[in-house]
Length: 182
Image (tube, rainbow, N blue to C red; front, top):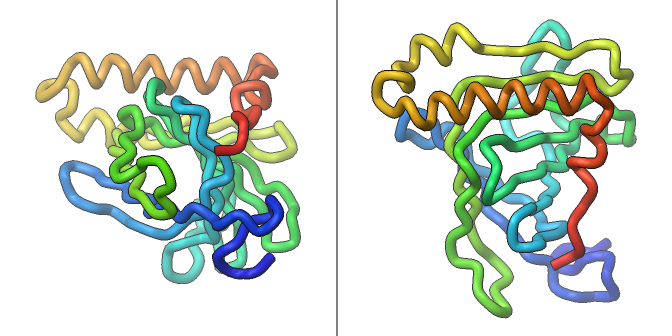
């Protein structure tokens, strides 16, 4: 596939700048390619965007990894499928976030921004299904969100519980079924 075109017969590829914010500051921003958008569920693909290797102990994210990222305008989480450069599934890193906000998307637009606010809670589900980990609950409690915005804190806790139930209940892959291409 050549730069600037997709695998849909030469249709120009829509570029998305993903911007992840935390506590009002930009944590990371990176380019991604839009795979699909049905008005609620967006799917983008991007290479590992951080510098070097990030070893969590249960998984390593490293240069060459490819992330297929699922965002929703009406759900309080984002799910990132992580694969090695040669396609081996590592697992899914799930961020509890406010619903995604899209800026600059209009008819014929080939570039726009996806803004996502990280709320600290995370879930990891390994590709082999053997490991499901709730992450960063201590950071969430220390963030002060429950005092500043109790409604958002409650939504974040419910989102983490929902993700865990979806993974453990076998409905996780249905959640990630791709919407129609945009």
